[in-house]
Image 1 (spheres, rainbow, N blue to C red):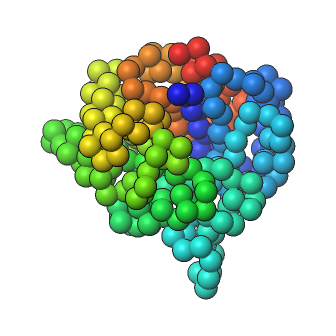
Image 2 (tube, protein in one colour):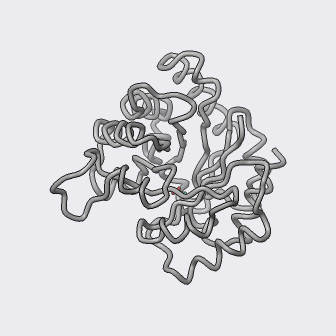
Length: 247
Ligand code: PGA
């Protein structure tokens, strides 16, 4: 299975930021891993055009569960696909917190993404209080069970483990904590989708940067990364792409 380096630009980026994409592609146009950037929806079409003929794929950060209709301000998976997206991040902790997204809603969105022929990147992760209370595996197990789409396969689902307390904080779990969670998730996926689980990519996310990428990517069942802050700069994201290509 090819590993996946996925960048989440969150609410950052304007047309001027496409210069970072050009820099990334000129230095890392054909990496050994898969490479994906998820900019704000307004930049998807322009980024997809810039990425044509390269290994870079372009994704979105959210979508509506319905294919179309009277939902002012929302964007459907089909519209994202039309703009050039191949992946959609769903259930990011910032959306679960800022917009009260539940597992049920995340699953509905993930099913819409799969129905549109795109790949769903389903995010799960525990809060610091949940980890301190020893509930990490229980929490992420429940999130996984409730959030992945019906008919999930290795081709239409990516799982991202992102401890909430590690996002944007510079703090990361220990390597053995990451190993414990990723191997737990592989087993849980096996129970949900059988053999297909062996090749579903399980990404780690939360303060991944060039300085910790090599050691995190060596952890068993870490099949890539979901990178926030460090995906905004071509040099940082490029270094992470290279670390993953070598892993
Ligand atoms: P971070 O964000 O890399 O800035 O910690 C990760 C994410 O939210 O996907």
